[in-house]
Image (tube, rainbow, N blue to C red):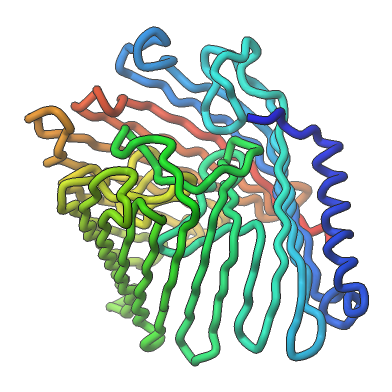
Amino acid sequence: MRPPFTFVSARQSLGFGVVALCAGFAGQAFASGFIDDTTAKVESRTVYFNRDFRDGHTASDQGASKRDEAAQGFILNLQSGYTEGTVGVGVDALGMLGLKLDSSADSSNSGLLPSSGNNPRGSEDQYAKLGLTAKVRVSDSVLKYGALLPDVPLLKYNDGRLLPTMFNGALLTSKELKDLTFLAARLDKYTARDSTDAQDIRVHCKNKRYACNITADHFDMYGLDYKINERLTAQYHYAELEDIYRQHFLGLLASQPLAEGVLKADLRLLKSADSGAARAGSIDNRALSGMLAYAVSGHTFSAGWQRMNGDNSMPYLDGSNPYLVNYVQVNDFAAAQERSWQLRYDYDFKAVGLNGLTFLTRYVNGDHIKVPGSDQEGKEWERDSELKYVVQGGTFKDVSLRLRNATYRTNYEQFARDVDETRLIVSYNFSVL
C-alpha cells in the first residue's frame, strides 16, 4: 500500500483536478446551468467501532481478539450542472479524508483506517482519496466516466465504515422511455473503504468461500427497471466478472394500501455461475430471498426468508454489499445451501410527537449450511438493534446520532468467529455551494 496522502496534498489535488477538467470546457463552462446548477456538499462523520470476538482466540491463532478504533471522516461531493445545448457536459468530484482519533496495534484493522497489521501505533494517522468523474447528458441519458458510487442490485457500494468504497469505470443511465430505466456499465478498478490505492476489481472472499486476491480485468453490468404502475416495479439485471462469474437478477417491488396501513413486498432471485476460465473455481448458486412488511401508525412489522441453492455461496464484488434481504450488520447469510429467516420491527417516534427519533430491531437465523471439509451442518444467527436521532432544531439542527449493536454466533468456527459489535456514528451534512 502506498503511503496515505496528507490533508494538504489531497486538498490541492482536488482543486487542481477540478480546475484542469473545467479548463477543457472553457468555452462553455459559464453557460447557464453548468455553474448555476453546481452543488457541493460535505458530510462530517465521526465513527466509533468496537468488535469483540467472543471465541477466545488471540493474535497467535485466528487474529486479534477485538477491533476497537475511532476516526473522523470528511466527504466532499461536488456535482456540476451541465453546459447548454443538445449535448451537456459536466464534471463531478469526490474528495475524502480520514483522521485517526484512537487506535492501538492490538485492536486496529477495523476497516475505519488503513492498517498494515504490524504498525506499532495501530492504524495510519490519516488517509485521503480523490475521485473525478466526467459526465455527458443527451436528452434523458447520462454517461459518466471516472469515480462512481454505484447503488444498483448487482453492485451496491459499501459504506459501512468511515469512508465509502469508490469504483472506477463507465456508467450509462437512460430514461428515454416512460417508466423504463436502462443502465450499462464497465468497471475495472476500485478503492477500498480503508485504502488509498486503486486496485483491480475482484471477487469477495468472505469466510474463505472463494480464493482471495482473484482479480479480473473488468466487470460488466446491464439492467432494466420497469415501473408497471404506481404500486409495482419489475427488475432484470445481468453482470459478469470476466473469467470468474456471471450473474442474473430478477426482482419485484410491490406496495398495496391495506386497512389503515401499507403492505410492501420485495422479492429477489439471483442465479450465479462461473464464467470463462473460472479463475476462482466452480461457482453454482441460486439465491432466492423475499421480505414482506406492513407499516401502520409508526410501526413496521417485517418478515424475511432467504434460501441458497447449489454447491457454492453467492458471489459478489469485493467492496460491495450483496443484494439480499438477510444481509444485515455483520453477516450476509449467503453460505452454500444456507436457509435463513428474519423477523424485524421498526418504529418511528414521530407517531407520538418525537420527531427525528427512530428505532429498529431484528433477528436472523440460518441453518443447513454446507461447511467445506466437514459433515457438520453449519448454523448461525444474528441479532441487531439501532437507535437513531436527528436533531430537529437549534445550533445542532440536522446532526444525526446513530447507535448500532449486533450479536452474531456460529457453530463453524473454522470459517467464522462469534462477534459482539457496537458502532456509534455522529454525522452532519452541510452545503458549501
